[in-house]
Image (cartoon, rainbow, N blue to C red; front, side, top):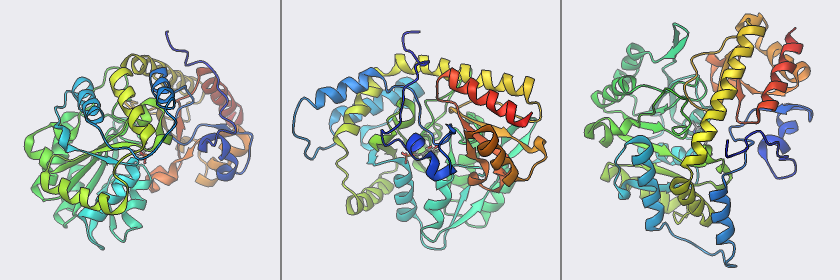
Length: 388
Ligand SMILES: Cc1ncc(COP(=O)(O)O)c(C=O)c1O
């Protein structure tokens, strides 16, 4: 391997949410932090060098989104996802969660219903409920050991008049890489009932071997006009701290409306480092990403095999995307509170409590596997000892 993903890099005292704030969120210091979704790997050199080069100039004033920023994003979408986008579809947001929040604000009214598919990334609930909109739940169902969408339930919820649907594609936390057929069914139902579809595709580059990401908006021109796509290099290249993402809006009227909100609410010029990092990542990061994917695939398989052999009371699912492993702990026969206590007090691991993703996450845990293999091994052995 050209890149060393085994290297242990201390993140203590770097202002890292995952390391420096574990005790704030979990009540003790001595846990292996495998929760918030960033990676313990070095950001690739191509990005670090681009930022260092920019720092050779001592003035860091306002910037603006340049042609090279748009070119880098459009080039990536085409090369990695065979999605041909126009550069003027791209709008900037200082992160996907703020982007989702502004989308809800722009396109829905107080009291409107917005569909989500629990268990799902918890800020989807906040961006809806904190703005006085109503969450409508279209829970995923487990069939044949894998999570699937419930289209009949979805159609009923759409019939009742939902204005917007937010999906996680691929899905955090269950790790599904939705197929083109599955996405087409959702997108066509949204079209039929005039419901705007928001597709959060932040994990779209973190796809396991043998699976392929489909941008929903690439499925047809009609679907593109009814879909807004949220993408970013932040998860893929470990640059979430640079707060730079892209909201892709093919529908010109919707784009105009969204830009109006953004111009009123935030500087839409972008962040000088976020822009440089995005360009470097999308123009030069593919080689690093390919090796990262092999490494993560290895971590996932290590954990799945360990659980199957040594902890058969736990269950994992077909893991197709993201570095976040979703683990069903119902077989332990504990209450959810006992399960959380077991993880923190006895196993000394800080996983994400499945309940934050909705009540379907009761008795589940989400494990962040974007760390050196030796850390994953240590966590699995601590878990085995605690359960044993
Ligand atoms: C599905 C999903 N959307 C958005 C985010 C966060 O995006 P941002 O940091 O750009 O707000 C995450 C982070 O884990 C995520 O999993």
